[in-house]
Image (spheres, rainbow over the protein chains, first blue to last red):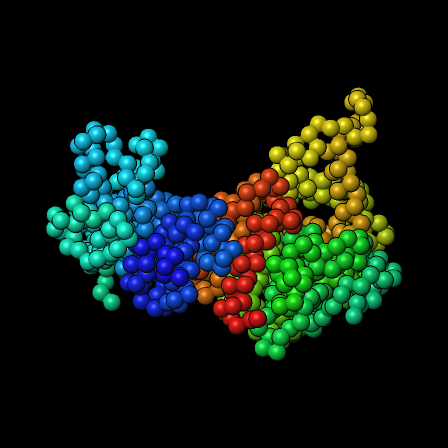
Length: 208
Length: 389
């Protein structure tokens, strides 16, 4: 099953302890939740914007609610999930800082994956062509992209601090789907990683 | 099993020769929200499928305002298939080859469960308006008595739409440890002002009918058919949607080529509503309609929990699947979603789906493939988690 999982999701799945209570925000078709239920016996929940995706998830036996990360996270009590996951979604939220603060509040551990707009090819594309970059992972033209709040790895590190979180660990995502550990504060990954996965904790969270 | 009706006072719906299915009469009094005790209490019910040895495959269906226990079998009065026979049966989403399905007639109903049309043993006459006002919680209490009597500790799932959904929510709140999974459909945690308003129109229509006789119409062997039919007509509009009415009827004329410049049923929609009203009075008791609509009006689940709905589900281990319909304006998706939000706030396990349809509130009774897939998938998953084959 792991082979069918998107590489960032597979890497996140590796970090989730068995029997954990997990909330997957923007869970899409539920692939990660299904994988986690089958392989790690997690108590998985999903929040998904697309009603079609939600209906498909529920028909597959997953616990998913139709909702919007920007507006609906306030409902959840603090520290109620062992892991909260936001994969390839933060760049599409209206208020990434609020959303990130909510994730840190709800989850004991927060996993966020996102495309790195600081990758050299993106930078070069803008420099050479003078037009908003379109890449394999970010294939939309500027006027129709749902990705309204793209960021670089350095931007995300800064946002984490502003939202009251601290980085536990980070993984670089490469073009071919490989993941590897990275130094979140170094300049190298921000230039060479196509994407990143961050594991965060709230600075204010009570220690377990 | 049917108790013999006193031939002096004919029940409007349940003639002595109509078999209400199974029934159990409880001598122990039922303490009602109104502060009165009711005894004896008879609960009429139907079952489909077989209870397994572990008694772990029981599914309780809760019916809506004008439903009854005949969810998946022919109605003894109308001869029509059960109101949920598309959803419940062998191989169907609620699969009676796997699950033991129970459906009771609600307290205050008119298909064999104790209600205003039954004989008050203290007077020997029909209760009429001396029947106590009952609540959704009282209905659920009566159901719990039956579930106890059947020797079932836990229900694998409680399912219901509209008022049935209210009962589902009440079950989950009142007996969280007895409800493994819950499917509230097209419902709300309280009855809105608009819904109370429509119910009041219906009740006033019944009470304005001279044949209602202050609720004592059985003594004269009559019933307020006209008033009850008008109540049904008004209510039926709320079960549909503007788009569906337009699609099905538009401004089409009924059996004529031109408007008649009179007040006969010129339009197909008028004829349709008349038919709905006329057929309803053959299978429903007017006083039951008053009592059950009142029970819905009084429903406000959060009120018992300091006004905070999430508190009704605090610590609940029940798995919820809330189903709503996009064109339902009686119990709109947003009201269903409020319940989902409250469940999230209680950290409960909840799914929420909104089915796109133009068929309005009544969609929950119709062939809706997405609802069927949702119910089937959810129930399969719940059954698998609890070792029910």
